[in-house]
Amino acid sequence: MAGVVEAFGADYLRAKSLSPILYLDVEGESDHPALPQKYYERWSKAICAGHKVGDTILPFRPAVYLNHGDDPNSSLSLNAACAAGAVCVGVSVAYYVHKDGSKDPASPPPPPEKMVWNTNDIVPRPLPIPHGHPDAKIPVLVWQYHGDFDGDIDPELVNPAYEALVMSGTVPAPAPAA
Image (cartoon, rainbow, N blue to C red; front, side, top):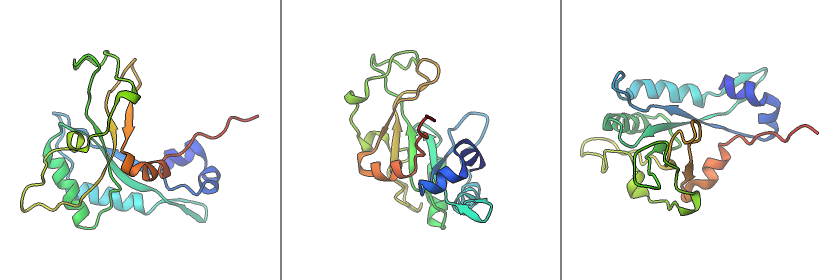
């Protein structure tokens, strides 16, 4: 939160009446475990508390960024945390497709106009949520369909059903100084 305030300025965020969405990156790696439920509960609570600047609390909203192929226990823990009262406005899912069908990140991404939103392909595992586990019905907001193209570009597609929510949590760049 402090980084967002530092980058854009508290006055700018207040003037725009923004409540930015912060995505916790929980992409699984072999050297660290799945997202623990209690960790997410504490993180969500801290983000929902906002960031104090002077006498003002700037609001923020929690979300999660994960990889489609991650350990399904991250999704189960996130659902359990939300069922226990944590907040998650939605998830951004990395699930790469390549124009030439390869998995090579140097392969050019398909152009955005060729991409079609398909929730059934994008929703993280496990699906359906196994019996006995809570399903908090956390929406998939964004699909990162290619990563690290040209070293630093991650093309994404916003879920049309949640476009207003995503845009309301996005901080637009300030206009250039005249």
